[in-house]
Length: 193
Ligand code: AP5
Ligand code: MG
Image (cartoon, rainbow, N blue to C red; front, side, top):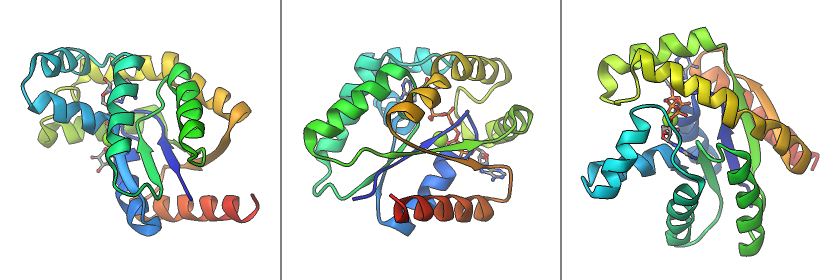
C-alpha cells in the first residue's frame, strides 16, 4: 500500500499535482482545504465559522480537522491508498496521523515536500485569485497564509524527518516536469525501502 502526503507552502502545487499522482498511482485524493470549503458551501453555522477562519488565512483547530478527515477516510469503501493534500499542517496533526494510521493498520504516508520560492507562489495565487472565487486568494490573506505556514506548518518537516519518510522535490518547473520529478523520487524511494 502506498500513501502520500503532498506538502508545501500555499500555491506550491499540492492540488494540481495530487490530481495527476492520484491517477498515476490509483490513489484517493483527499484535500483538507476542499473538505472545509465543502462545509462552507453547506451554509451551516459550522460552515460560517470555518469560512471566518479560512478567509483570514487562519488554521482550523487540530481537533476539528482530525474529526473531519478521519470521518472522510473511514467512508472510503475499500482503503487502498490515499494522497493527503494540505494535511498535516501542524506537529500535533502529524502526531495524530501516525497514531491513527497505525491503529487502522495503514502504512504511514511518505511526505513529499514541494519547494518553491515564496515570491513565485504569491504571484501564482494572486493570478488564481482573479478567477478562483476563493476568499483566501487576496493579498492580505495570502500574506497571513505564508506567515502561518512558516510558523505552524514548516516545523512538520523536521518532525517528519525524524519520525517518518520524507522526500523533497523542487517544484519550480512546468507542471508536467514537477509531476515526473515526484514520480521519480517516490519510485526510487519505494524501491530502496
Ligand atoms: P488549502 O486548500 O490546503 O490551501 P493552501 O495550502 O493555501 O494551498 P492552495 O490550495 O492555495 O495551493 P496548492 O498547493 O494546492 O497549489 P495549487 O495546485 O492550487 O487550505 C486552505 C485553508 O483551509 C487554509 O489556509 C486553512 O485555513 C484551512 N486548512 C486546510 N487544511 C487544514 C489543516 N490540515 N489544518 C487546519 N486548517 C486547514 O496551485 C496554485 C496555483 O498555481 C494554481 O493556479 C495552479 O494552476 C498554479 N500552478 C501549480 N503548479 C504550477 C507550476 N508548476 N507552474 C506554474 N503554475 C502552477
Ligand atoms: Mg490546494
